[in-house]
Amino acid sequence: MQFENTLSFAQNLDANDKLAHFKNQFHLLTNNNKHVVYLCGNSLGLQPKSARLAVEQEFSDWAKMGVEGHFNAKNPWLGYHHFLTENAAKLVGAKPIEVVVMNNLTVNLHLMMVSFYQPTATRYKIIMEAAAFPSDLYAMETQVKHHHLNPENAIIELIPRAGEHTLRTEDIIDTINANGDSLALVMLGGVNYYSGQAFNMKAISKAAHEVGAYAGFDLAHAAGNLHLQLHDWEVDFAVWCTYKYLNSGPGGTSGVFVHEKHANSAINRFAGWWGHDEGERFQMKKGFKPIAGAQGWQLSNAQIFPMAIHKASLEMFAEAGIENLRAKSELLTGYLEYILNNFSEHLTVITPKNKEERGCQLSIIVKENGKQLFDFLESENIMPDWREPDVIRMSPVPMYNSFEDVFLIGQALNKYFSKNK
Ligand SMILES: *Cc1c(COP(=O)(O)O)cnc(C)c1O
Image (cartoon, rainbow, N blue to C red; front, side):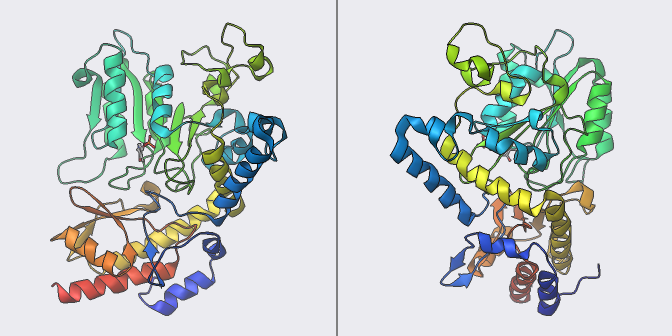
């Protein structure tokens, strides 16, 4: 599409956007009654109006029924996680048996590592991004130490080529092949939180499997953002949080994917009563018998309140359709890229230009005084986020951002750079 930097052009795209009405289902931010262009959906998604109603339902049933809410609540708590499975599976391109919602992200990453990182004397290495999110770095480091191995030898870090900001798929695959027989696991983000780069999960999983390793992904920045096909890509496991693109509230619950091929395997795991055969759970017997599939990794009974929010949010995603959201997202982020390129003498977009290699986020390095520009944007009711040492991240999300929002970013940048040449 040939973009134009005019209000009428942006408004025309909004008028033709079949998803535009979804933004009315959110609490959009304002400042002194002025619209705030919220660009932090990659960090904490805005609140869907249905979230409060969903939680109030559970409060009300708890108040009226006490423990009997497990059976008699509108959404009986005993099997609450089942209410989320189908929509969560659809969202990530999985079969229902491959998905469960439980716990929090880093907790789930550790649970998956217990199963999918079982190093031997010869096969013990993990490939990950040098610039992974810190929680993932700490999780990998301590998993390796848990097996009495040295992270210096066991963790292979992927680093962009000199002068580049993102990783090349061919370099990732070369690293997998170079470590072939000693490689236990490839564990990457689906989208890097800093650069906004989306990885080719299909090619990476294939390469990992060809050398006899597992492939797992942290989809914190990919779930609700990319059109994922985890089953077809043969990813072994994946984990994601629900408070970023999935708008399910601060500290919200998390999702887990375990490929169907592992559904009935006797793979090692940490167990709890909620992962035990449902027919026998209350017989309180010795001897763990896992439920087939991802549900067999559950430890505890469901966290009803965060899961109620997530249930409401997943219903919106099911209604909008992730493929429709992704189609709008490509256009919306393409428009942002076009707007930002008007200021290329002052700033560089480090996120890949190829839309297959990014989600909605663009990461920007400003040539001078990036923090000052960031503060100026906030004063203009544009709300991106700042990541040390020098990146401004902007994530127009298709669920509630508009093309007019993106146009307004350009107006604010224009104001700033005409003053600060
Ligand atoms: C946001 C994020 C986390 C946060 O982990 P929590 O356990 O939810 O606190 C971890 N890893 C990645 C890649 C993230 O983007």
